[in-house]
Image (tube, rainbow, N blue to C red):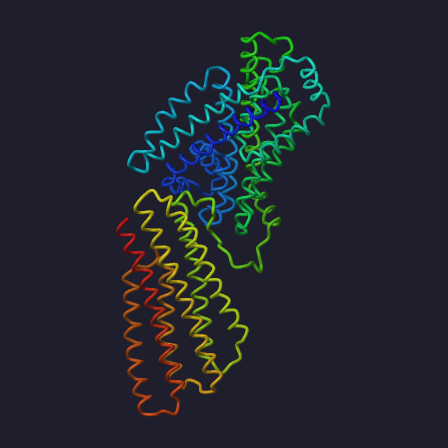
Length: 568
């Protein structure tokens, strides 16, 4: 029963640490959310800049998993290339070593829990204050407080080893040479995968090693394994994502596994001697000789944790330096591993669910998704016009393909709106809320344009079934109006990427309205003069009405986007 209770206490301490890490990381992400775009702007083709950016972002949000998960979203959204993301991944691995330094410098040299309650006391009132930024900083302080509290509880929950039999068992675990190293690498990998946090796994490993439960070298092996285990989080984030998201996750995996392989083989001949040179003291402590001497245990614990922190940093920095020259080769490897999808099912290309709590980044992804949706709609319109202008030809495959694009647009609208609606509750500024509302409305407009394109195809099918085709004048009029409507759709895409203006949209819409009005007047007169082709004339009027509707909705997209831009 005491053993079971001890395990529960250890699990509870670890849970407090994880909760603190989660709250702190989410708070920091919200605080830094509006600045993430600026940070991304720092990333260029220079791989060294990418490493520094990944390091800085991880230090800011205090979670390499959060950084790499966000990175998957950035690559999916086209905000950075796959090559640029590799440097950021490397930098994130270096940034995550900060946790080991917190544990080594604070956890065993002072009562870290003394900081916990004051931080929670400072943070809690802020969460009730007006202003999103104050609430975000309040969450961050509470997270830091819980993290320190969890770290203190973790240290207290792991008892000192005072049983000679247990000490003997611990020593025997390290007596199998290279096999022992491999076993503990696997243990570190599994532990991190289960905890879904390399920081928590590192804190636990350092605590166990500092109290003699894990031999020094085996603790190092666990740290190596933790670098592999942390890739599981990114793998999970990429499930259901696009090709680029999966490639980014594979790069993280390949980079960390390759690092683990060379580190295991060079651990004893190279890395451990380097750590001994860089860190003072002897980490190979026989805890059986210092049992009962509290000062000696604290001193030994401090030496061990500093050595582990030095190794953690040395390993990740060296791994980055070793693999940084091979960025292009890493990219080619994952492109071979994850080939381009040929016949993918309709799905989002850019939006990542992991950024729902970061509205500013979700807005960027949703905007890219709308650009993609605009391209689909314009392709659909071009095909619909070809079918409408050639109702006498057999275009069954083109009809099916175009109508399938309508289903794609329906699915895109559904998923975009779903993600934006969930993000709206996390919006921290009026500008973000307005932009989300605009994107939701304009996504619906794009879906309605796709519906109008489908109606044009059905009009063509109706004409084909009746064997009463448009005359040459009708075809010329429809083609002329269709060309201008296509310009309006092209203008929407150009406006989204800053290559057009709202004034251009208004000019195009005026031309569409004027041309449609003149055509309608002329064809109504023809209907009065002759009733021989009444069905065809009605189909023509129906077609130009839907063409005008497409133009109106295209102009509406630009108008609303321009209004939102001016208010921001």
